[in-house]
Amino acid sequence: MSERLGVVIVGAGPVGLVSALSLARAGIPSVVLEAADEFPIDLRASTFHPPTLDMLTELGVGETFVAMGEKAPVWQILDVESGDRAVFDLSLIADKTRHPFRIQCEQYKLTPLLHEACQKTGLVDLRFSSPAREIVQLSDEVVVRYDHRGEAREIRANWLIGSDGAHSVVRKCMGLQLEGDTYPSVTILVTTPFPFDQHIPGVAAANYLWTRTDSGSLFKLPGEWRATFYPREGETDDEFMLAPDAINERLQALAPSLSGYDIREIRAYKIHKRIVPNYRIGRMMLAGDAAHLNAPTGGMGMNGGIHDAMNLTEKLIRVIRGASQDLLDLYTRQRRPISYEEIIQQADANRKRMEDRAPGRRAEILANLKSITADRDKHIAWLMKSSMLEGLSRAAAIE
Ligand SMILES: Cc1cc2nc3c(=O)[nH]c(=O)nc-3n(C[C@H](O)[C@H](O)[C@H](O)COP(=O)(O)OP(=O)(O)OC[C@H]3O[C@@H](n4cnc5c(N)ncnc54)[C@H](O)[C@@H]3O)c2cc1C
Image 1: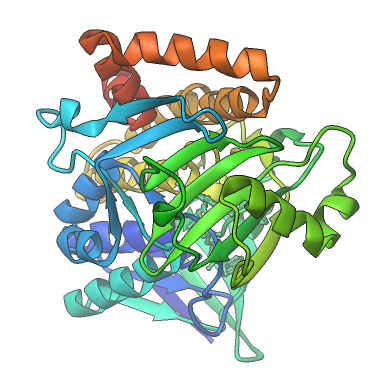
Image 2: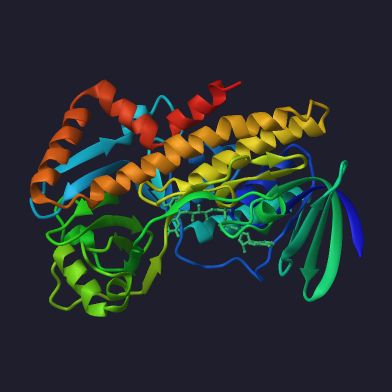
């Protein structure tokens, strides 16, 4: 069975669905192939930055999504032991965004919302249980071979967006590789309804922190908290992952509890700093995790992928309406340096800062950060960068 289409999108994660919705709102239909049988409910992104909320609002789903999450008007870097902190106040950039706050909400709540909005347009055909297997590019079309519930199918399309995540088949079929490194140790993520706000004085909805023994982060989500921890020096990944006592000990250092913690989920995950050399080859383009991977410290991977999707579809819409295909090369020129310099490198610096656990260094780091928050201009500059607004302005200025 073979069909002829305009646009095929491989992968119905946040990036693929934002791409489909953005195209649909311009009247352009697409087919979205998704390998899974349904949307996964897994622990992935939880931080949504101001410009991403602006984009979701532009797509018609922002206000519903904001209402589903936990608002973080400030975020902070906190030394739990001493109570010392540097607080970053997003109200200072209220003239730069319609959403001067972060939203903490599970990524898996966004995808069904985007899907619903796509369905309302009548222009997006999302096919679950449809893994793309092989993609061949000819001079005037892309041939996608995929399975649908065990049956081999084929689509011929003018354009293909590869938003099929870290293990992207599209990327491989484009002959591209994610270049870079994998961090030597895993990060562990724990969720619990334990009310940290009643136990840690001054805790915010979004915290990057040091305890007496560890470093990591603590985020308030609707109905639960999410803590991440990095391995301690000399700790092997196995010891780190497999010892439930170690998790309990880490949480005790965060906020002592005689009755312990109701732990809902523990997940260990590997992290990478990798990027492809080019986001476009002919009629095939990559976006999101298929194109770049970064440490989650700072919460920028999915946000950056959504920014890719908005940038790419704005250009693809113009090309479909008659503009030169060269416009699509501008997508790589604008987004790749931002992914590398503003996301991968910034996330790496954030992680290194928090992994510096020497007590003397913490005080030094906090003193430096507080000198930034004490100076309005420096504070705003820091917020513009960490909220990803600066990266978007930099991208827009590239020709
Ligand atoms: C623990 C953790 C915390 C994170 N926290 C944050 C955060 O706070 N903020 C942030 O911005 N980012 C965060 N990230 C990163 C974020 O989750 C990813 O960047 C994001 O999921 C990327 O979206 P995507 O749509 O590109 O890829 P994915 O979400 O991976 O979606 C890809 C989709 O493609 C499908 N697929 C794969 N192969 C095929 C195929 N061959 N055919 C068809 N479909 C296919 C998959 O089933 C999947 O549905 C975090 C990640 C982790 C692991």
